[in-house]
Length: 156
Ligand SMILES: Nc1ncnc2c1ncn2[C@@H]1O[C@H](COP(=O)(O)OP(=O)(O)O)[C@@H](O)[C@H]1O
Ligand SMILES: [Mg+2]
Image (cartoon, rainbow, N blue to C red):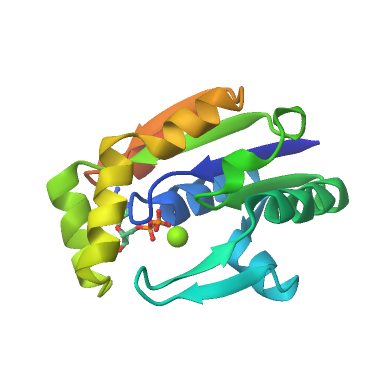
């Protein structure tokens, strides 16, 4: 059984890296958003923050079910690090330098408040720190420039 999770602030390149790792190691790529929709884990819509509330414990439970079923997977989600350590072999944290991250989020049409919140989360390394506290084995990949995918090709 192999499970790699990819966490990080939105826009830091999780999806890019997770797909590359899945391709390289021949693991199944799982987008947590699909699971959230399928299992109806979406909570209330927070208009001010332009985001849906998702219970991280419920999501972690659904993910554990999936890990047991699929066996060899890469999970892409900024909440994937809430999956208990015993089910996870490696937690990749994607990071991106702030000016580039701001540009990426602008392109996505995020609201100014959503951009500010996510920039703060990146500055404070929220995903990294939570993943660290959860006891995961961590690998940090900086995706600010295009070489990030080459690192995956070389390392995995
Ligand atoms: N290494 C990189 N170099 C340049 N652009 C990147 C890189 N990784 C991701 N991007 C771009 O940044 C944006 C966000 O990447 P994405 O993988 O969707 O992030 P996330 O899944 O964390 O929200 C996308 O437009 C993607 O093409
Ligand atoms: Mg993504």
